[in-house]
Image (tube, rainbow, N blue to C red; front, side):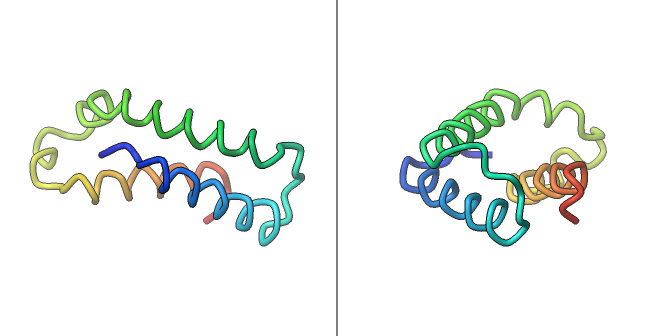
Length: 85
């Protein structure tokens, strides 16, 4: 799981604002700068936790799943936990 570039973080923050605060009608108590800091922190945290997440995956499939599949699984579980899917 590679960390996002600065441009990708910016685009992700804007998309997060549109999806969470507009489309999903969540309370917007964070301003745009705070959302960017949130996205930056989560991306940095995921990068730091990547090895730990990889170790938590059953050894029989760890090397079979691609980095993209692992990142999608992390996203899917996070969305499920948030009640978004």
